[in-house]
Length: 304
Ligand SMILES: [Zn+2]
Image 1 (cartoon, helix red, strand yellow):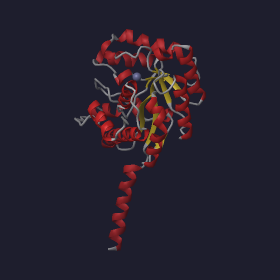
Image 2: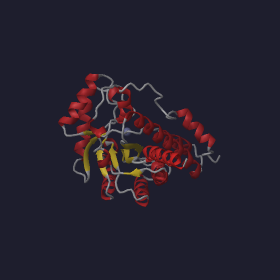
Image 3: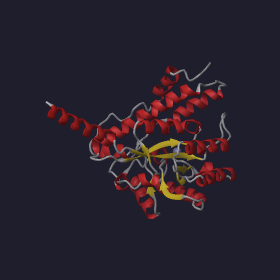
Image 4: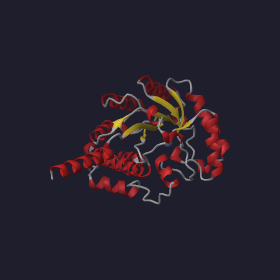
């Protein structure tokens, strides 16, 4: 009896350690440096974001730079601020085009236009994040870009955990523009629940298709919600047993050299690899407008 109990305990321990151990995640922030909003000047927001990361003891994230947003004295100054704080800068194109709507050669030139703007800044990495995570709707376009990036020394700055954080910020801005006031604690509930759902969803798929844990990359955006709540997100991830790693460590994962043969790859690399291995859904977890609007109502985000 005693021996049986020991064996069962040992099995449970192994299961528990497999399900929770080794989960690592890097933070990647798109569309930097963002424009001012009703809540923050552009500089105030950048400073807040840096401060929150520092308080959360996150040494390094990567900002994927949208050249069109960065192309001014103040834009470049804010990128310098991110770099001075130890964070990395990488390429997110100049015009933020959707690859489906552009010819591949023109699209590729836009990547170089952004590069020429930011390549001299400190901590610049040759990583490219596709806007809208759209990597091409035909094999021709997809492969044109894959070859182009390789020839120019770029790594695909993929994500593994997609989500709709941008939409939470969009709803916030729409309300602020109406003159509404919001409850920050309740906004935090919406944000943390949405983000954790996304992390669990994509990590669940990773666990199904990979024998050992992958190093994750989380999609975030340079906006008010991120600046206000990123520290809380980091606290939550750590409470759940996750470790924040540097983007360089994340992109050293085997995922970085696995380019699956799929199209309309707009949900990141884990999903792309799962699809290439026959995954047939479900494809999203709460990543839609209706779910997030309902959460705003459910959690009483608006005070009036
Ligand atoms: Zn973007």
